[in-house]
Length: 129
Image (cartoon, rainbow, N blue to C red; front, top):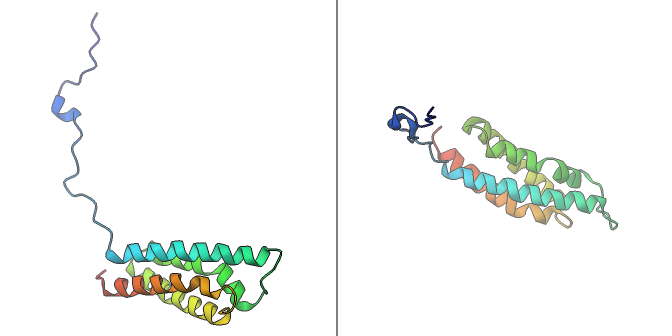
């Protein structure tokens, strides 16, 4: 009695790579992903400041910065271009309003996220969908 585990056709047993490899990510995607990371970190700092012993004043700008930037940056980072463009515009407007309202407190943490999101938005706008 012989047990043979080898396939009958050795060519079909080898894994062949796809003829069409996945398309590379657009140039704006790295910028939008960077904005997501920066907005998320700044948002965590703002939430921590709202819950710390030396509390940040609960104003419209601090609540806006504690709630909105990371979800808007995530919406800008991952979907297709038309939805991403709308999310970039909304994200930039929210960040500008929040930074203007909380410039003396937590607003300055969001300036890098604003710059990176704006650059990613300009690059996204120039790409063809």
